[in-house]
Image (cartoon, rainbow, N blue to C red; front, side, top):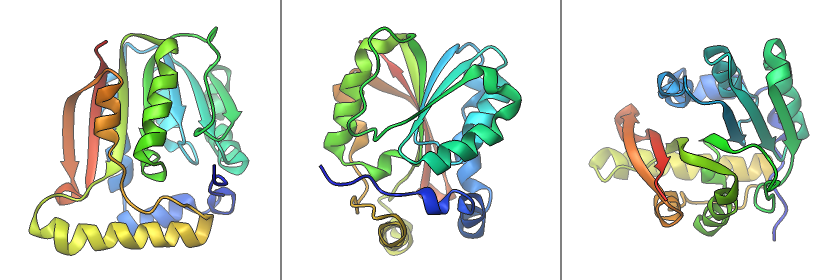
Length: 216
């Protein structure tokens, strides 16, 4: 297996890079489904970077406990700092999620969150992660996803596709990211017993906020 991409050098500037390129739209995409999560109690957040979504979730839901996992120690340090007011409800772990497996004795998670993380993985890697999560999921668990997309429109062909191509090349240069195209995560999740409940496109379909639910 190839070496995990190194996001450490971006930890301090990631937020500003995001705002310079997409303004508030990526964060709006991340937080769109927050109002649906008030009943959740144990969340597993994978690859949240500097922790802006984790912090928002902890503020919104004062009863939830979050386990956040990331391959970058610097990103996790930024996440912990951002979440310091709720640190008693936060557990972090540094791990390459392509190889990570949950502790079978862990709490049953009723929420999984991945925001602009699945695009760093191949379809096969996502399928493997979804399969490994199955034993530690609560019935009817939710999975919140924010991702880039290439809509099947003229905008998708002439604007979204070149932009996604440029983003992949930039992150390969900055972090060593090997994945260079959007994965087919919907098929991987569907095969693991997840069903898409709601999908909200933003920026003419370049971004997608999705709510999935475990159905088997």
